Amino acid sequence: LQGPVSLLLADAAVELVPREISRHPSVEGYARRRGKRPENILLDSSYHYPAMRGLAAAEKRGRPDILHTTLLEALGSPLNKAGVLRVFCHTQSGLIIEVNPSVRLPRNYDRFKGLLEKLLVEGFISTERGETLLRAEKRGLREWIRENYGDGAGVILLSETGQPASERMLVEQASTGRAIFAVGCFPRGDFSEEVKSIAQGEISISCYRLEAWVAASRLLCLLERGFAALEGGGLAPDIT
Amino acid sequence: LQGPVSLLLADAAVELVPREISRHPSVEGYARRRGKRPENILLDSSYHYPAMRGLAAAEKRGRPDILHTTLLEALGSPLNKAGVLRVFCHTQSGLIIEVNPSVRLPRNYDRFKGLLEKLLVEGFISTERGETLLRAEKRGLREWIRENYGDGAGVILLSETGQPASERMLVEQASTGRAIFAVGCFPRGDFSEEVKSIAQGEISISCYRLEAWVAASRLLCLLERGFAALEGGGLAPDIT
Image (cartoon, each protein chain N blue to C red):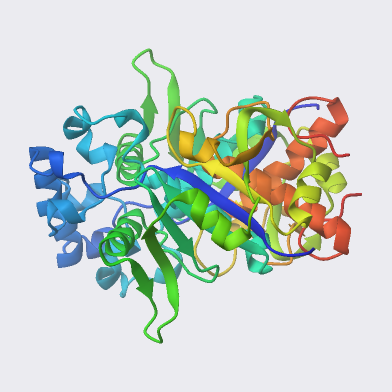
């Protein structure tokens, strides 16, 4: 195992309520119930659906629950507990969110949203001792990846139309220490052009269309098994 | 593959607010905001923590989010999509909840809670065409399992102190068509005496203590791989 495995949660449907609908009754009422200003709350289609009808690409937006469930899966994985997973998130609105592997995210959805709202307004979440747990930055994905992974780095998209990948292929890719696997965290449609433009491959790990959290858990499970087989370690049950 | 694989979500921390705390301000205020009567809402430690201090075994109760995330993982799994998974739930309050494999549960936590509240008050959730999606019944777990799985049926507990299990062992057990794997859906502590009394084994699938949704996804991933290897099917990537 040369280095960490990276998991990019791509095109996440996470953003603050856009100004153009911040005066809509379904948004204002919801913000009032939560004691917040409309522009400081996350867009959430479960509550703001009537307001979202006018938004462009509305069917792909306003689903922070997808990122929540997928982050809980990824951060709770044996691979992360073993210290070899690096998770980061890219949102449709153009933010990069860096995730400290040791962060303990709220299990409760409302509290998770409260945390993300604070993150998106203030730019970071840190502990009392000054350790950064989450950081959000408006950045181009291509540029951010080049800075963090070097020239020529790219991502491998998980998609049901990709090339079927075996466990061995996954582990070989992961073993380079530069592999970034991308799972889409949006409710429908395809990856954005921005994400597709940095793709170096597109793989499939199931014959079914999987939700983001299931795709992430299957990918991580296969990598855990592969690494355990390589190292004889305790990450996963033995293959026999 | 002889029959379905069963997954028991055991000792789930799901119950309606108990009468003894239904007049507590944190419960009444929360019920009012949701437009419901206190006795018709789910106990949730994120909102009712101050009221829960007086309850017995409070640290194990009031976490419907654990069942939610774990159900989303299980119902979204390739094994369920292939039609060979049977999921049911047992709560600390003594209910058995049967889950139709084709139910599409709300991804939003508030809506999931609303659905469970209706289920716990009315006993079932069905479609307009009369198909039952969820059914809740006050039943002894041992008796329910005997009726549904026959005499001598028991469950295999997933626990970090269990015997390390290989993929082959899991698949052999699952292939009998009578195996019931139990994942605990409570925040801390041990399985209840009721669950332990019907355990026929205790296995571990990781050297880490896993959250319920991670344990469920790893178990199902290993079973999917095992079945794919047996059948040459498309449930999971090939093992080479």
